[in-house]
Image (tube, rainbow, N blue to C red; front, side, top):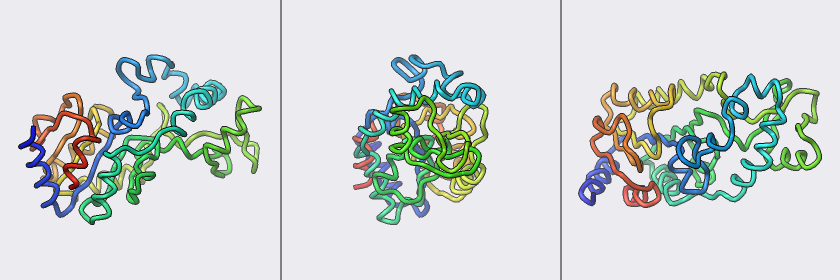
Length: 245
């Protein structure tokens, strides 16, 4: 393990165009529940109801109840962990060009990263589907103290977090930028992702197809471990600070 970490650190240090790709594993270390697996969000809530755009449009109160009781308290308490902070340091040092993330919690930005490409949106931003006006999650949570469904102050439109739900397309601009970064990088650092959720999971494959070397940091095996130059098993908060040192 030590020799693998040393090898990965050398590759990171020598990279001319380093890109990170992050998934739920790095945020789990900050107390954000994952979706899949034992104890995951989908074991408590029906994704066909709280994560589907069709179900949301039919009855938004179910999602907003979940947001009020589960999502908001977790996000308010969560803070970036050493893994997030290590990626932010790599960016400030000029070595890391961007972070492509599947996460919707905004923790990477809170850690100080500036160039973050969010493939699945962000729970902290709520937008009106009619007029486009945006609200913070604090504003909406305050409304939910007296309302089952928050209202837009500018019109009568329906409010929704900018998270991509089942049945919605990923944001085209973010997806395009992610694949451009993947094609241009010489090293991709994949952190805390199962690498099975598509189309986002195709991004590391695009980096490999472009000739990039792949470093994987994850607690469980992934489908791309055999194609990585180094696959490190462990927590992002333990490993990434050593790669960024």
